[in-house]
Length: 378
Image (cartoon, rainbow, N blue to C red; front, side):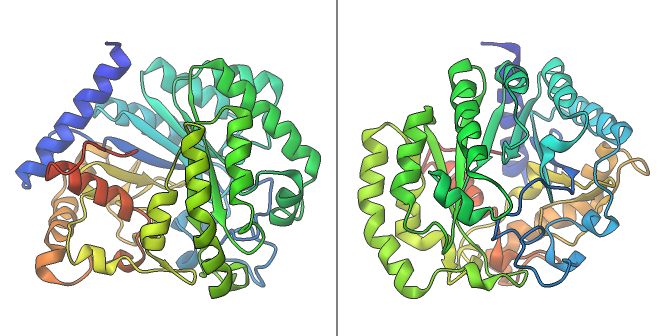
């Protein structure tokens, strides 16, 4: 077993011990989300920050992380280095590189990948891939990690409908680069598609495109109706048509050896009802475990426990990550999440009724109760 996998295993075991103990944590966060960019080089219709359908700029209450209000484009280099170093010292295995824009636009992005590789930490990159070049493919292709490409299309025509500012040839170039990255054989490469009016009839083509480039995992997500872009939400009739198509698309993906979440989409619509997430019924049955294994560090160093939480735990630079993670305020958050089913009220400051971590919590709950061996991505 490699040193990297040993680090991964040690992190996971210590997190589970913390969850079982309830009263303390035995390691730092297993995964940390780093908001490193607020700018983007595309304009996805369903984006709550950069969509051309937005009639006015988003405000802090409608974007995932509060630092977007500062309009600063990138996380400072010194802050990134401090985050990585303190996370490494606490045993963190995975760093989720994202933000309210495109992380690969950060001027030092490729160097960031190299730094994490040096420290045996795994980058989990959420990217549109537009900035990829042949030279960058070589760098990314030598990086142990996970690159999830937000495509939302399986062909140039659909790509153009979803991204009005971009050109079809960009999709064709991106397709070649993803195929080369898969062929490198080092990182995990997956795709993601947010289903909306512009692409709802193209799920089969998305599966076929994944096969063409060699991708073995696709994540599908329904578009959300918040942030003033409800016009991208499929009609009830379109949703019904999608659900009639899903079984055949799922069967096709399985025949290609491609893992998807289409079965879950068919079973519960991913807790989505006409663009509105409704996860509160789930949390009346199971706890939230996120406080034991994940945290978010904003572009200005603000520490929040979950991407849609308004609960600030401190700020990098003013406090050490270890002190914030082990603080009474963080422990209070953890215990509130554990008590949700018994207490019958959401965690203060969190969107428990529209939770983006619902599936992960469900997977972990099943694992803890010996119903599944699936741990999830965090």
